[in-house]
Amino acid sequence: MNGYNRYAIYYAPEPGPLADFAADWLGWDPVTGTERVPPALPGLPRRAADITETPRKYGFHGTIKPPFRLAEGRTGEELHAEAATLARRLQPVTLDGLRLSRIGQFLALTPVGRTTELASLASLAVMELDGFRAPLTEAEIARRNPKSLSETQRALLRRWGYPYVMEEFRFHMTLSGKLSDEDAGATIDALAPVVAPLLPAPFRVDSLCLFAEADDGRFRLLHRYTLSG
Image (cartoon, rainbow, N blue to C red):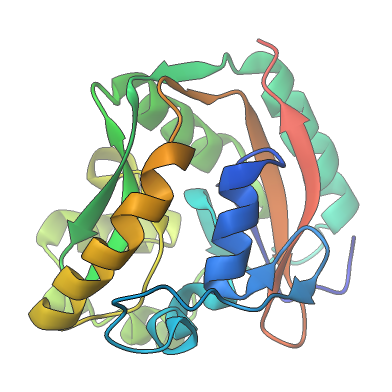
């Protein structure tokens, strides 16, 4: 449990067709810690491995509490115990479904329907586990390019270590790096018929996962916690 560079709380789908396809698509399985061979889908503008290079190391996930270094004096075992305790208090969340979307310059699966309960769950996780997060260094803050953020996002970055939490939280499960308009359109056309049968409706978030970043920069799934509140 110790010896990792960063930890995070993610939603990751249970083992099954969606998780399997996403691991293949991204080329990385965080459950087994092994590389996968991306599919050669007809119509892709570039190799899948090129399209997914940026998100690959994180594994397929939806961020709940973004990656953080452990605070001095805290351990991975303590974080695991606290995350397990938190999961026993949290209730599962059910949404209408998932859809393939374009968010700015990248592609992701995003929720369909009302997301208020999921946002509340994420905010609680951010707050309750924040005692395990080491404060950002000035260099880490600078890498977020604060000048490009809104005033609210800059305040969230300083307070919680990430600009897209609390009121700025938007759940998504990333499927690509930055793409041009042309490449994004072609990738959606290629992915849509493959992904559509795999998308759950309704979409139920009934577990959260502890992920950790090893020295190779790749994230592994360490523990899955059932939400039983």
